[in-house]
Image 1 (tube, rainbow, N blue to C red):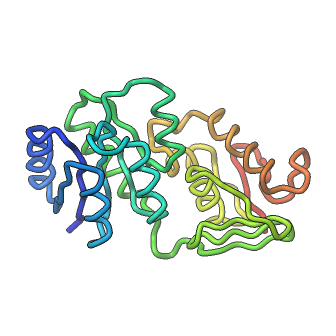
Image 2: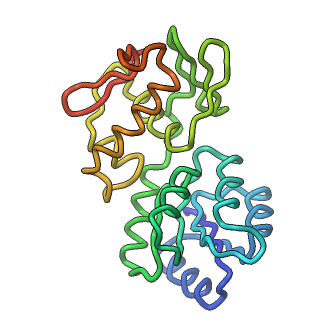
Length: 224
C-alpha cells in the first residue's frame, strides 16, 4: 500500500483528511509539527507527503526545502490557505510537486494526489548524463560545468530528468509540462520556455546557440 505522511497542525482537519485517505486505500502517518515530520521521515520511508505550510514551529516553506534536501524523488503536495502567486511559485521552486489552495474539494485533492504519485520517478530513471559541456548526477543532485558545481533548482532537475529519460528524442511541450507540474499546466508553454532559458544560461557554453538543450517544433530535445 502507498504510505503518505500528512503534515498539518489543525487536528480536526488532520483527522478528517487521514480518515478520507485511509478510506481510499492509503496508509497514513501524521505529524502536527515540522520537527515531528522530519523525525518521521528520518525513521521510515514514505511514498508521498501532503504538507500544510502553516506550522507552529517552522515555516512550511523551510520544511519543504529540508524535506526536499533529504530526497529528490518523494512527491510532495502542498496544502495552504496562502493564495498569493509568490507563495505558490516559491513552493514549486523549492521542490513541491503540486500546490492546492484551501478550501478545496476532496475529489480534486484525491485526483491531484493520484496524478502526483503517477509522476513519481520510476526506478528506471536515468541516474547520470555526461556531455562535452556539463555533467549531471541525478542521484546526488550534482551538476558540474567546466569542473565547477552549478546550482539547479528542484524544478530544473525535474525538467532535466524528463528530457534525459528520452535523450536524443523530442519531448513534446505538453508531456514535459504534465510530468513536471501536472495536467493543470499542460498548456503553459511560456512557463517551460522560461525554465529552459535558465538551464541554457547555467549549462550551455553558448546559451544563444545551444548544442544540448535543443528546441524542436513542439518541444525540446536533450542531446548528450
